Image 1 (cartoon, rainbow, N blue to C red):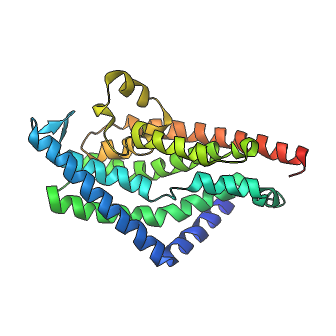
Image 2: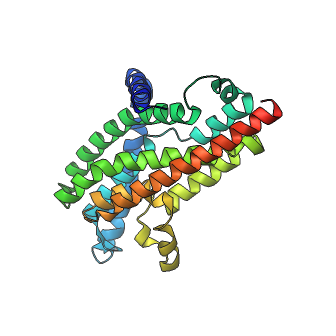
Image 3: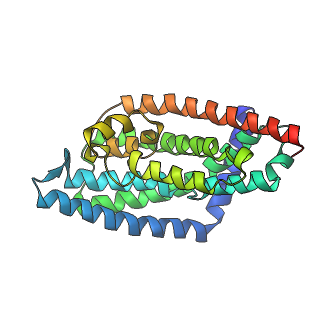
Length: 260
């Protein structure tokens, strides 16, 4: 799939997402509720202790939660299940008749659909965080968090397509979706900073791709200026795209062999 075709598909999906104002409002409303509750809980935990939790102050935790949730709430939470249903129903088989890459079109559409939601959630998150705890702990960290959020969304979507490709063989991606979400919630740092985990689990989590999806942008936004997180995201994005591409290619070959 050419870069131009990818961008055209992405732009079309983004416009469609912006036009669906009810879905956008629902996503933002859900985001506000989750961030308000989780940030308040983490602030209380920090304030009731030594003024911080695992090296994060109450303000840093607020910014962390605002960005970790923005990186994940902007996505369709049931995307893996939807892709699996499309594979099982034969919808993907019909898409093979098109000249463009099935995975490329689906990735472009998913990213385009997520970006308006991401922008809306980040905007609201900045307002909520600034109102409750003040400006970001680090201007440099906040600047790095912006591209990290986009990379986090892309990594998440690539991984979801790789996981969903299991439906080419098992015909039901619901169990895969359930497992994947738990990985993102805990090992991806969506609900809590990875530093809160036991040392042995923290060492494992930081080298897995899930950490690139929510933890990386949230860690940067919380005031920890670590540019290597961006490098990790770029590396994992390339690896996840290759994995998803290989999985879809193998699945497409299987469809052709068994007749769809």
